[in-house]
Image (cartoon, rainbow, N blue to C red; front, side):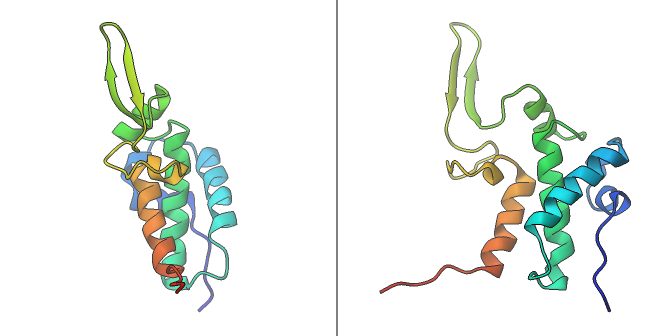
Length: 128
């Protein structure tokens, strides 16, 4: 059976936080995702990878109903702490308990889940 590209309806079914996002915005995010998740991916994880990457992109753009999207709208993704009196901002570890990586995929839960698929698909090489 041939693999079929995920649609806006597929993304909304998998991630209800994007129920209110316009089809056009989802289509653009899916197009970006399909540049990352190409036909070298096994069909069994290809759809999940594309949906996770698209959800990551939408979240970074401040789209969707989740907390991460609200934080992104405020321009605060990636901050580990924020104080108001005598303003003090700390940026470093990725929001949501990430490892402190500078990888933009670490900034959202969707991106971190996408990275898990990438790591499973492309395991590290041991060099002696």
